[in-house]
Image (cartoon, rainbow, N blue to C red; front, side, top):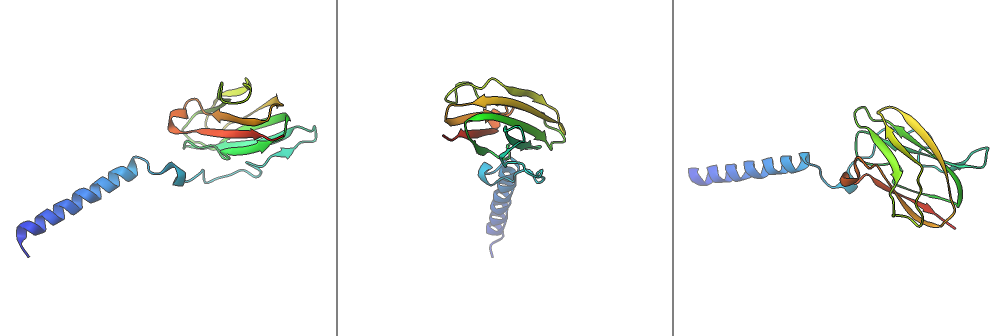
Length: 149
């Protein structure tokens, strides 16, 4: 084998390998990134409390996803709990203004790592309501609540 060809092949393979490592470290396909590894019992499941209010827990972690990213409720009273399994990242949850049939003003403006907060609101208009972590919306931390008629 020609020594120059061998060096070029080795150099090209090394550069390609380093490029692959660099791309993997920069992110990857958001659709295949892992969701938080820990989930609380009942997270993502809409249930009805003894007071008749629909209840749901949404989890956040040291990543940029909500678990669940989508859920469906019926028109009426809703109680959302945002629970942080994060060790480092601070999150919030608000319904994106102008991204639903009507605006929902209630929100959790800031949630420190490891904490949990709850808020109640009423929703009567069917449709899709986008919610977000306004700190990480540019990184894709967005979800959808569907109100089904």
